Image (cartoon, rainbow, N blue to C red; front, side, top):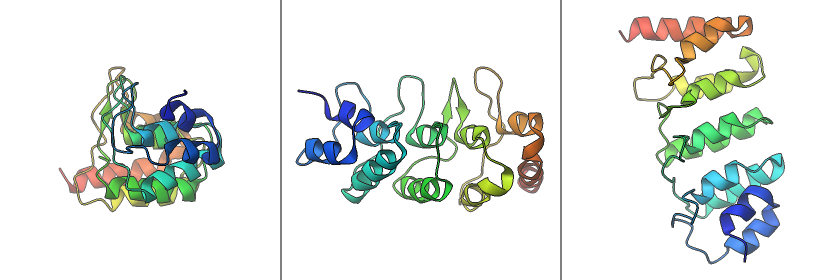
Length: 176
């Protein structure tokens, strides 16, 4: 029998829901990933969002970071394909159940690095930026990954990140 995690990662939402119905959605899976992490890693955009939403509607909980330190937010924003408004809705729900916007993966860095790596212009990502800046915690834009990458260094390296760079620098100046 295939693991529910593998089905969440690779199969359609219908197949995943059939396999997950009645399962303990809070239990860590044999590979250590949460079901949310597995659903968020599905490369089929429609299945990624629908399976993740189904899990959130069922009360699924966040899992521990994976072996590389990635959290559910890292995986959501680190995907190749995106629907920004659906990413926003999922991110809001993940944060509501406890996802840390300042989570750091040693390899990939802060979650916000994943947002900045998305292949969109600042104006396209504005709703995600607004979500970040609306958080009640002090935002971290300066903790480096093991490769020295921070949101600030990423934004400085890319010309189409000028407006978010200005916004981050202003935020840091105000919260120094």
